[in-house]
Image 1 (cartoon, helix red, strand yellow):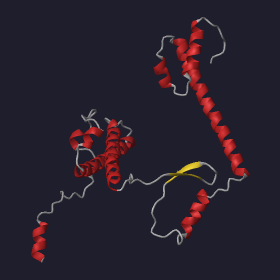
Image 2 (cartoon, rainbow, N blue to C red):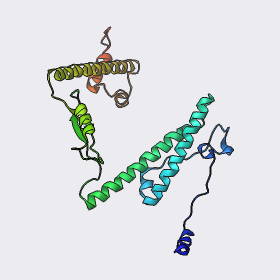
Image 3 (tube, helix red, strand yellow):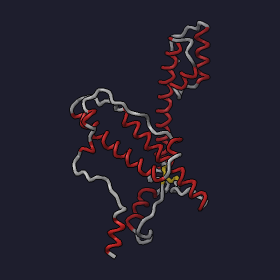
Length: 237
């Protein structure tokens, strides 16, 4: 029995053990460089062609690279020196997001084919203790809800709401405050967009609306026509 186990162990391979912290820092050959040649992030179409095993390996490679870059970012900040090619952190983060999206796509396809469901946790909308609508994801617990008194009290405190007069009054005032803030932001963007139109009459309206998404394009176009007719006013939009 022991010989068979030893014979099987010959086919088991591991990476070279490293007990130092050099894995958290860049290679010495690129230290001090002002510009480091790096590639782009992984795209969704490229990741969809890889197997689950390759995605699993690539995830840990990206995780290791992210840890190294964050360590170097902290070291450069402590030394008050600009990190070369700090966009590498964003590229790794984008690659990890795309990889996770591909894994979610495969999980959804598998569960929909085998079970008829997406396999993801359901999300519900419930009212919290202040009456606001919040997202809630149920999760499994080792203890049955009937026996888990502390968790039931926590849910009661968090989501228990009688919608009494005080809660309704709070929601009304919160809605009024949110509306005022939204109107204020919309007015600020409208004034900034109007200044751009006044200074550059031939500005691209689509690009301007994309820059200021809260601006009503019809109102801005009407104001532009009025300004084009030499309509004099001392008050901006």
